[in-house]
Image 1 (cartoon, rainbow, N blue to C red):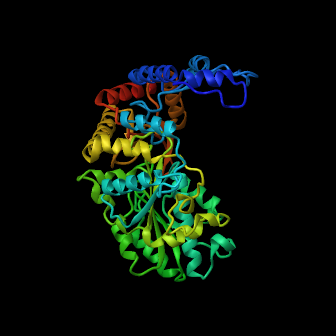
Image 2 (image 1 turned 90 degrees about the vertical axis):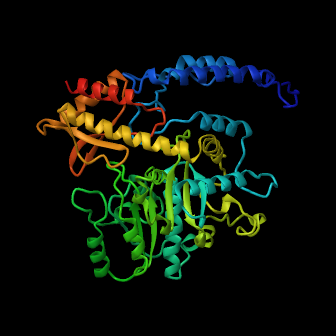
Length: 474
Protein backbone atom coordinates (compact mmCIF):
# COMPACT_ATOMS: atom_id res chain seq x y z
CA UNK A 1 0.00 0.00 0.00
CA UNK A 2 2.24 2.78 -1.34
CA UNK A 3 1.45 6.47 -1.32
CA UNK A 4 3.02 9.12 -3.50
CA UNK A 5 4.73 12.06 -1.84
CA UNK A 6 2.19 14.66 -2.96
CA UNK A 7 1.53 16.34 0.39
CA UNK A 8 3.62 19.38 -0.45
CA UNK A 9 5.58 18.96 2.80
CA UNK A 10 8.37 16.74 4.01
CA UNK A 11 6.30 14.66 6.45
CA UNK A 12 8.31 11.47 6.56
CA UNK A 13 6.42 9.89 9.46
CA UNK A 14 3.06 10.30 7.74
CA UNK A 15 4.39 8.87 4.49
CA UNK A 16 6.02 5.98 6.32
CA UNK A 17 2.76 5.14 8.09
CA UNK A 18 0.82 5.39 4.85
CA UNK A 19 3.22 2.99 3.18
CA UNK A 20 3.05 0.55 6.11
CA UNK A 21 -0.65 0.71 6.89
CA UNK A 22 -1.16 -3.06 6.70
CA UNK A 23 1.47 -3.66 9.38
CA UNK A 24 -0.08 -0.94 11.54
CA UNK A 25 -3.54 -2.47 11.25
CA UNK A 26 -2.13 -5.91 12.09
CA UNK A 27 -0.54 -4.47 15.22
CA UNK A 28 -3.77 -2.79 16.31
CA UNK A 29 -5.74 -5.95 15.49
CA UNK A 30 -3.40 -8.02 17.63
CA UNK A 31 -3.72 -5.61 20.57
CA UNK A 32 -7.51 -5.62 20.21
CA UNK A 33 -7.81 -9.40 20.05
CA UNK A 34 -5.54 -9.84 23.06
CA UNK A 35 -7.57 -7.37 25.12
CA UNK A 36 -10.96 -8.80 24.19
CA UNK A 37 -9.88 -12.40 24.74
CA UNK A 38 -8.87 -11.53 28.32
CA UNK A 39 -11.65 -9.04 29.04
CA UNK A 40 -13.07 -11.11 31.91
CA UNK A 41 -9.81 -10.70 33.81
CA UNK A 42 -9.26 -6.98 33.25
CA UNK A 43 -10.00 -4.67 36.20
CA UNK A 44 -13.23 -2.71 36.41
CA UNK A 45 -11.66 -0.05 38.65
CA UNK A 46 -8.24 1.44 39.40
CA UNK A 47 -6.82 1.86 42.89
CA UNK A 48 -5.11 5.03 41.71
CA UNK A 49 -4.81 6.92 38.46
CA UNK A 50 -1.18 7.61 37.52
CA UNK A 51 -0.42 10.98 35.94
CA UNK A 52 0.09 11.32 32.20
CA UNK A 53 3.16 13.51 31.78
CA UNK A 54 3.68 13.43 28.02
CA UNK A 55 3.81 16.66 26.04
CA UNK A 56 3.18 17.38 22.38
CA UNK A 57 6.32 16.41 20.40
CA UNK A 58 7.85 18.82 17.93
CA UNK A 59 8.36 15.97 15.48
CA UNK A 60 5.95 13.08 15.37
CA UNK A 61 6.84 9.64 16.66
CA UNK A 62 5.03 7.74 13.93
CA UNK A 63 2.04 5.46 14.42
CA UNK A 64 3.95 2.34 15.50
CA UNK A 65 5.95 4.07 18.23
CA UNK A 66 2.84 5.99 19.30
CA UNK A 67 1.01 2.68 19.62
CA UNK A 68 3.77 1.37 21.87
CA UNK A 69 3.50 4.56 23.92
CA UNK A 70 -0.25 3.98 24.16
CA UNK A 71 0.38 0.50 25.58
CA UNK A 72 2.79 1.95 28.12
CA UNK A 73 1.00 5.16 29.16
CA UNK A 74 -2.68 4.97 28.25
CA UNK A 75 -3.63 1.30 28.18
CA UNK A 76 -3.17 0.87 31.97
CA UNK A 77 -5.79 3.58 32.52
CA UNK A 78 -8.48 1.85 30.46
CA UNK A 79 -10.91 -0.36 32.35
CA UNK A 80 -13.10 -3.29 31.41
CA UNK A 81 -16.12 -1.06 30.83
CA UNK A 82 -17.37 -3.48 28.18
CA UNK A 83 -16.74 -6.49 30.42
CA UNK A 84 -19.30 -8.91 31.85
CA UNK A 85 -19.25 -7.54 35.41
CA UNK A 86 -19.34 -3.84 34.65
CA UNK A 87 -22.82 -3.16 36.03
CA UNK A 88 -22.48 0.58 36.60
CA UNK A 89 -24.77 3.04 34.81
CA UNK A 90 -26.30 0.99 31.94
CA UNK A 91 -23.28 -0.11 29.96
CA UNK A 92 -23.28 -2.67 27.18
CA UNK A 93 -20.33 -4.33 25.50
CA UNK A 94 -19.61 -4.35 21.80
CA UNK A 95 -20.57 -7.53 19.99
CA UNK A 96 -17.90 -8.84 17.60
CA UNK A 97 -19.92 -7.71 14.59
CA UNK A 98 -20.55 -4.26 16.09
CA UNK A 99 -16.83 -3.80 16.75
CA UNK A 100 -16.06 -4.79 13.16
CA UNK A 101 -18.66 -2.33 11.92
CA UNK A 102 -17.24 0.41 14.12
CA UNK A 103 -13.74 -0.19 12.78
CA UNK A 104 -15.02 0.02 9.21
CA UNK A 105 -16.92 3.18 10.12
CA UNK A 106 -13.57 4.81 10.87
CA UNK A 107 -11.96 3.35 7.74
CA UNK A 108 -14.62 4.58 5.32
CA UNK A 109 -15.12 7.83 7.28
CA UNK A 110 -18.43 9.03 5.83
CA UNK A 111 -20.09 12.30 6.80
CA UNK A 112 -23.57 10.81 6.86
CA UNK A 113 -26.09 13.30 5.52
CA UNK A 114 -27.49 12.47 2.09
CA UNK A 115 -29.22 9.54 0.41
CA UNK A 116 -28.87 10.57 -3.24
CA UNK A 117 -25.24 9.55 -3.83
CA UNK A 118 -24.10 13.05 -4.78
CA UNK A 119 -21.14 13.17 -2.47
CA UNK A 120 -22.74 10.81 0.04
CA UNK A 121 -25.22 7.94 0.13
CA UNK A 122 -24.54 6.53 3.59
CA UNK A 123 -27.74 8.11 4.92
CA UNK A 124 -29.62 5.53 2.86
CA UNK A 125 -27.99 2.83 4.99
CA UNK A 126 -28.93 4.80 8.10
CA UNK A 127 -32.56 4.92 7.01
CA UNK A 128 -32.53 1.18 6.30
CA UNK A 129 -31.05 0.56 9.75
CA UNK A 130 -33.77 2.69 11.34
CA UNK A 131 -36.38 0.56 9.57
CA UNK A 132 -34.69 -2.57 10.92
CA UNK A 133 -34.76 -1.17 14.46
CA UNK A 134 -38.44 -0.31 14.16
CA UNK A 135 -39.05 -3.90 13.08
CA UNK A 136 -36.92 -5.19 15.97
CA UNK A 137 -39.05 -3.26 18.47
CA UNK A 138 -42.35 -4.08 16.78
CA UNK A 139 -42.99 -0.41 16.04
CA UNK A 140 -44.82 0.73 12.90
CA UNK A 141 -42.92 2.35 10.06
CA UNK A 142 -44.65 5.71 10.56
CA UNK A 143 -41.61 7.00 12.46
CA UNK A 144 -38.67 8.90 11.04
CA UNK A 145 -35.44 8.19 12.83
CA UNK A 146 -31.78 9.03 12.99
CA UNK A 147 -28.62 8.35 14.95
CA UNK A 148 -27.11 10.64 17.58
CA UNK A 149 -24.51 10.28 20.32
CA UNK A 150 -26.69 9.08 23.19
CA UNK A 151 -29.95 9.44 25.06
CA UNK A 152 -29.19 13.04 25.99
CA UNK A 153 -29.00 14.15 22.37
CA UNK A 154 -31.89 11.89 21.40
CA UNK A 155 -34.04 13.50 24.09
CA UNK A 156 -32.79 16.89 22.91
CA UNK A 157 -33.79 16.17 19.31
CA UNK A 158 -37.24 14.91 20.26
CA UNK A 159 -38.00 17.65 22.76
CA UNK A 160 -36.72 20.37 20.43
CA UNK A 161 -39.39 19.30 17.94
CA UNK A 162 -41.89 19.09 20.80
CA UNK A 163 -41.02 22.68 21.71
CA UNK A 164 -41.65 23.72 18.10
CA UNK A 165 -45.01 21.90 18.22
CA UNK A 166 -45.97 23.80 21.38
CA UNK A 167 -45.15 27.07 19.65
CA UNK A 168 -47.31 26.23 16.64
CA UNK A 169 -50.30 25.70 18.93
CA UNK A 170 -49.91 29.37 19.84
CA UNK A 171 -49.05 30.50 16.27
CA UNK A 172 -45.41 30.96 17.25
CA UNK A 173 -42.33 29.72 15.38
CA UNK A 174 -39.99 29.17 18.32
CA UNK A 175 -37.12 27.97 16.12
CA UNK A 176 -37.10 31.34 14.32
CA UNK A 177 -38.51 33.74 16.88
CA UNK A 178 -37.19 32.35 20.14
CA UNK A 179 -38.96 31.13 23.25
CA UNK A 180 -41.68 33.73 23.83
CA UNK A 181 -44.23 31.56 25.63
CA UNK A 182 -44.03 29.24 28.64
CA UNK A 183 -43.74 25.55 27.78
CA UNK A 184 -45.64 23.29 30.13
CA UNK A 185 -43.93 19.93 30.75
CA UNK A 186 -45.21 17.06 32.89
CA UNK A 187 -43.15 14.09 34.12
CA UNK A 188 -43.05 11.72 37.08
CA UNK A 189 -39.50 10.35 37.24
CA UNK A 190 -37.63 12.06 34.40
CA UNK A 191 -34.08 10.97 33.70
CA UNK A 192 -31.38 13.56 34.32
CA UNK A 193 -30.72 13.70 30.57
CA UNK A 194 -34.27 14.94 29.99
CA UNK A 195 -33.79 17.67 32.58
CA UNK A 196 -30.47 18.64 30.99
CA UNK A 197 -32.24 18.78 27.63
CA UNK A 198 -34.93 21.11 28.97
CA UNK A 199 -32.17 23.36 30.32
CA UNK A 200 -30.42 23.43 26.93
CA UNK A 201 -33.70 24.19 25.16
CA UNK A 202 -34.40 27.19 27.36
CA UNK A 203 -37.50 25.58 28.85
CA UNK A 204 -35.82 25.22 32.23
CA UNK A 205 -34.96 22.05 34.11
CA UNK A 206 -36.79 23.28 37.22
CA UNK A 207 -39.99 24.05 35.35
CA UNK A 208 -41.17 20.43 35.07
CA UNK A 209 -44.54 19.85 36.71
CA UNK A 210 -43.99 16.68 38.71
CA UNK A 211 -46.72 14.06 38.52
CA UNK A 212 -47.36 11.77 41.53
CA UNK A 213 -46.26 8.15 41.26
CA UNK A 214 -48.05 5.01 42.34
CA UNK A 215 -47.29 3.79 45.88
CA UNK A 216 -43.86 2.07 46.03
CA UNK A 217 -43.48 2.60 42.29
CA UNK A 218 -41.80 4.99 39.86
CA UNK A 219 -44.73 4.90 37.43
CA UNK A 220 -47.22 7.72 36.93
CA UNK A 221 -50.33 7.56 39.09
CA UNK A 222 -52.76 7.96 36.21
CA UNK A 223 -55.74 8.90 38.37
CA UNK A 224 -53.73 11.64 40.08
CA UNK A 225 -52.47 12.80 36.69
CA UNK A 226 -56.01 13.03 35.32
CA UNK A 227 -57.00 15.11 38.32
CA UNK A 228 -54.06 17.44 37.71
CA UNK A 229 -55.07 17.88 34.09
CA UNK A 230 -58.72 18.43 34.94
CA UNK A 231 -57.80 21.18 37.40
CA UNK A 232 -55.31 22.90 35.09
CA UNK A 233 -56.08 25.29 32.22
CA UNK A 234 -56.77 23.40 29.01
CA UNK A 235 -53.65 24.23 27.03
CA UNK A 236 -51.08 22.20 25.11
CA UNK A 237 -48.30 20.50 27.05
CA UNK A 238 -45.43 18.03 26.75
CA UNK A 239 -45.50 14.73 28.65
CA UNK A 240 -42.21 12.91 29.24
CA UNK A 241 -43.04 9.35 30.21
CA UNK A 242 -40.82 6.46 31.26
CA UNK A 243 -40.26 3.36 29.20
CA UNK A 244 -38.11 1.89 31.96
CA UNK A 245 -36.74 4.00 34.82
CA UNK A 246 -33.04 3.73 35.66
CA UNK A 247 -33.43 2.56 39.27
CA UNK A 248 -36.16 -0.06 38.97
CA UNK A 249 -37.04 -0.27 35.24
CA UNK A 250 -40.60 0.82 35.98
CA UNK A 251 -42.91 1.68 33.11
CA UNK A 252 -45.67 4.22 32.92
CA UNK A 253 -49.04 2.89 31.78
CA UNK A 254 -48.49 3.64 28.12
CA UNK A 255 -51.90 2.40 27.01
CA UNK A 256 -53.60 4.73 29.48
CA UNK A 257 -51.46 7.63 28.29
CA UNK A 258 -52.34 6.84 24.68
CA UNK A 259 -56.02 7.01 25.64
CA UNK A 260 -55.48 10.51 27.07
CA UNK A 261 -54.67 11.67 23.54
CA UNK A 262 -58.40 11.51 22.81
CA UNK A 263 -59.11 14.15 25.46
CA UNK A 264 -56.02 16.36 25.72
CA UNK A 265 -53.68 18.08 23.31
CA UNK A 266 -50.11 17.15 24.14
CA UNK A 267 -46.81 15.96 22.73
CA UNK A 268 -46.01 12.53 24.12
CA UNK A 269 -42.33 11.65 24.48
CA UNK A 270 -41.14 8.29 25.82
CA UNK A 271 -37.66 7.89 27.25
CA UNK A 272 -37.03 4.19 26.59
CA UNK A 273 -33.24 4.37 26.50
CA UNK A 274 -32.84 0.71 27.45
CA UNK A 275 -36.37 -0.27 28.45
CA UNK A 276 -37.33 -0.41 24.77
CA UNK A 277 -35.64 -3.80 24.57
CA UNK A 278 -38.39 -5.39 26.67
CA UNK A 279 -40.28 -5.43 23.37
CA UNK A 280 -37.98 -8.22 22.17
CA UNK A 281 -39.31 -10.70 24.73
CA UNK A 282 -42.85 -12.11 24.42
CA UNK A 283 -42.95 -12.28 28.22
CA UNK A 284 -42.27 -8.57 28.72
CA UNK A 285 -43.34 -6.73 25.58
CA UNK A 286 -46.72 -5.85 27.13
CA UNK A 287 -44.81 -3.32 29.26
CA UNK A 288 -44.58 -1.21 26.09
CA UNK A 289 -48.10 -1.79 24.86
CA UNK A 290 -49.40 1.46 23.37
CA UNK A 291 -46.01 3.10 22.79
CA UNK A 292 -46.60 3.22 19.05
CA UNK A 293 -48.89 6.18 19.75
CA UNK A 294 -46.07 8.35 21.07
CA UNK A 295 -44.95 11.41 19.14
CA UNK A 296 -41.29 10.65 19.86
CA UNK A 297 -39.16 7.95 21.47
CA UNK A 298 -35.57 7.81 22.73
CA UNK A 299 -33.55 4.58 22.52
CA UNK A 300 -29.86 4.03 23.29
CA UNK A 301 -27.87 1.59 21.17
CA UNK A 302 -24.71 1.50 23.29
CA UNK A 303 -26.73 -0.06 26.08
CA UNK A 304 -28.70 -3.23 25.36
CA UNK A 305 -27.95 -3.34 21.64
CA UNK A 306 -24.30 -3.73 22.64
CA UNK A 307 -22.65 -1.48 20.07
CA UNK A 308 -19.61 0.67 20.95
CA UNK A 309 -20.00 4.17 22.31
CA UNK A 310 -21.47 6.44 21.25
CA UNK A 311 -24.78 5.49 19.66
CA UNK A 312 -28.47 6.22 20.13
CA UNK A 313 -31.52 6.82 17.98
CA UNK A 314 -34.54 9.05 18.02
CA UNK A 315 -37.90 8.08 16.57
CA UNK A 316 -40.28 10.92 15.63
CA UNK A 317 -43.65 10.49 13.95
CA UNK A 318 -43.42 11.21 10.22
CA UNK A 319 -46.45 13.46 10.58
CA UNK A 320 -44.13 15.89 12.41
CA UNK A 321 -41.51 16.01 9.62
CA UNK A 322 -42.28 19.64 8.80
CA UNK A 323 -41.85 20.64 12.45
CA UNK A 324 -38.60 18.69 12.50
CA UNK A 325 -37.18 20.56 9.53
CA UNK A 326 -38.40 23.90 10.90
CA UNK A 327 -36.42 23.11 14.04
CA UNK A 328 -33.18 21.91 12.45
CA UNK A 329 -32.95 23.16 8.85
CA UNK A 330 -29.80 25.11 8.05
CA UNK A 331 -31.30 28.46 7.10
CA UNK A 332 -28.00 29.72 5.66
CA UNK A 333 -27.54 26.82 3.22
CA UNK A 334 -29.90 27.44 0.28
CA UNK A 335 -27.94 25.05 -1.95
CA UNK A 336 -29.48 22.17 -0.03
CA UNK A 337 -32.82 22.73 -1.73
CA UNK A 338 -36.16 21.62 -0.35
CA UNK A 339 -35.36 19.56 2.79
CA UNK A 340 -38.45 17.42 2.24
CA UNK A 341 -37.48 16.56 -1.34
CA UNK A 342 -33.68 16.55 -1.13
CA UNK A 343 -33.38 14.58 2.12
CA UNK A 344 -30.44 15.29 4.38
CA UNK A 345 -29.99 14.56 8.06
CA UNK A 346 -28.45 18.02 8.18
CA UNK A 347 -32.04 19.33 8.25
CA UNK A 348 -33.56 16.69 10.53
CA UNK A 349 -31.25 16.72 13.53
CA UNK A 350 -28.88 18.87 15.57
CA UNK A 351 -25.58 17.76 14.03
CA UNK A 352 -24.19 19.06 10.76
CA UNK A 353 -21.20 16.72 10.83
CA UNK A 354 -22.29 13.15 11.47
CA UNK A 355 -20.35 9.95 12.04
CA UNK A 356 -21.69 6.87 10.23
CA UNK A 357 -23.12 5.51 13.51
CA UNK A 358 -25.62 3.31 11.71
CA UNK A 359 -22.95 0.95 10.38
CA UNK A 360 -22.06 -0.86 13.66
CA UNK A 361 -25.79 -1.25 14.33
CA UNK A 362 -26.39 -2.56 10.80
CA UNK A 363 -23.54 -5.05 11.26
CA UNK A 364 -24.76 -6.44 14.57
CA UNK A 365 -28.42 -6.63 13.52
CA UNK A 366 -27.50 -8.49 10.35
CA UNK A 367 -25.06 -10.76 12.20
CA UNK A 368 -27.31 -11.86 15.08
CA UNK A 369 -30.85 -11.01 14.03
CA UNK A 370 -33.97 -10.62 16.08
CA UNK A 371 -33.61 -14.01 17.76
CA UNK A 372 -30.04 -13.30 18.81
CA UNK A 373 -31.07 -10.10 20.54
CA UNK A 374 -34.09 -11.71 22.14
CA UNK A 375 -31.71 -14.24 23.68
CA UNK A 376 -29.38 -11.49 24.99
CA UNK A 377 -32.30 -9.62 26.56
CA UNK A 378 -33.93 -12.65 28.14
CA UNK A 379 -30.60 -13.95 29.47
CA UNK A 380 -29.82 -10.61 31.13
CA UNK A 381 -33.29 -10.50 32.69
CA UNK A 382 -32.91 -14.01 34.08
CA UNK A 383 -29.44 -13.25 35.44
CA UNK A 384 -30.72 -10.07 37.10
CA UNK A 385 -33.38 -12.12 38.86
CA UNK A 386 -30.74 -14.60 40.00
CA UNK A 387 -28.61 -11.77 41.35
CA UNK A 388 -31.56 -10.32 43.26
CA UNK A 389 -32.45 -13.71 44.75
CA UNK A 390 -28.84 -14.44 45.73
CA UNK A 391 -28.38 -11.07 47.43
CA UNK A 392 -31.59 -11.56 49.39
CA UNK A 393 -30.52 -15.07 50.40
CA UNK A 394 -27.16 -13.75 51.61
CA UNK A 395 -28.98 -12.02 54.46
CA UNK A 396 -26.86 -8.88 54.56
CA UNK A 397 -28.68 -7.21 51.67
CA UNK A 398 -32.29 -6.53 50.75
CA UNK A 399 -34.00 -5.36 47.59
CA UNK A 400 -35.29 -1.80 47.47
CA UNK A 401 -37.70 -2.74 44.68
CA UNK A 402 -38.70 -5.89 42.81
CA UNK A 403 -36.39 -6.93 39.97
CA UNK A 404 -38.78 -5.99 37.18
CA UNK A 405 -36.39 -6.46 34.29
CA UNK A 406 -32.61 -6.12 34.23
CA UNK A 407 -31.72 -3.77 37.11
CA UNK A 408 -31.16 -4.86 40.71
CA UNK A 409 -31.64 -2.01 43.20
CA UNK A 410 -30.66 -3.03 46.72
CA UNK A 411 -29.25 -1.88 50.04
CA UNK A 412 -27.99 -3.25 53.33
CA UNK A 413 -30.50 -5.16 55.45
CA UNK A 414 -29.74 -3.07 58.51
CA UNK A 415 -30.51 0.64 58.33
CA UNK A 416 -28.17 1.65 61.15
CA UNK A 417 -24.94 3.06 59.76
CA UNK A 418 -26.12 2.33 56.23
CA UNK A 419 -24.48 5.28 54.49
CA UNK A 420 -21.05 4.50 55.90
CA UNK A 421 -21.47 0.78 55.25
CA UNK A 422 -22.38 1.35 51.60
CA UNK A 423 -19.39 3.64 51.20
CA UNK A 424 -17.11 0.95 52.63
CA UNK A 425 -18.62 -1.71 50.36
CA UNK A 426 -17.99 0.38 47.26
CA UNK A 427 -14.43 1.20 48.34
CA UNK A 428 -13.66 -2.51 48.76
CA UNK A 429 -15.33 -3.41 45.46
CA UNK A 430 -13.43 -0.74 43.58
CA UNK A 431 -10.14 -1.74 45.23
CA UNK A 432 -10.62 -5.37 44.16
CA UNK A 433 -11.58 -4.35 40.62
CA UNK A 434 -13.64 -7.44 39.81
CA UNK A 435 -17.12 -5.88 39.83
CA UNK A 436 -18.32 -2.35 39.16
CA UNK A 437 -21.66 -1.09 40.44
CA UNK A 438 -22.82 2.41 41.31
CA UNK A 439 -24.52 4.04 44.29
CA UNK A 440 -28.06 5.32 44.05
CA UNK A 441 -30.92 6.67 46.14
CA UNK A 442 -34.38 5.15 45.82
CA UNK A 443 -37.27 7.01 47.45
CA UNK A 444 -34.92 8.53 50.00
CA UNK A 445 -33.05 5.32 50.83
CA UNK A 446 -29.39 5.06 49.81
CA UNK A 447 -28.48 1.88 48.01
CA UNK A 448 -26.58 0.20 45.22
CA UNK A 449 -27.63 -0.54 41.68
CA UNK A 450 -26.51 -3.18 39.18
CA UNK A 451 -27.71 -2.92 35.57
CA UNK A 452 -27.27 -5.98 33.34
CA UNK A 453 -27.21 -5.39 29.58
CA UNK A 454 -23.95 -7.03 28.49
CA UNK A 455 -24.04 -9.98 26.09
CA UNK A 456 -21.00 -11.51 27.82
CA UNK A 457 -22.51 -11.81 31.32
CA UNK A 458 -23.00 -15.38 32.57
CA UNK A 459 -24.09 -17.20 35.73
CA UNK A 460 -20.41 -17.38 36.71
CA UNK A 461 -20.28 -13.58 36.70
CA UNK A 462 -23.34 -13.42 38.95
CA UNK A 463 -21.70 -15.76 41.46
CA UNK A 464 -18.49 -13.70 41.41
CA UNK A 465 -20.56 -10.55 41.96
CA UNK A 466 -22.41 -12.02 44.94
CA UNK A 467 -19.18 -13.32 46.46
CA UNK A 468 -17.50 -9.92 46.05
CA UNK A 469 -20.44 -8.04 47.57
CA UNK A 470 -20.65 -10.37 50.56
CA UNK A 471 -16.87 -10.13 51.05
CA UNK A 472 -17.04 -6.33 50.82
CA UNK A 473 -19.87 -6.27 53.35
CA UNK A 474 -17.55 -8.06 55.76
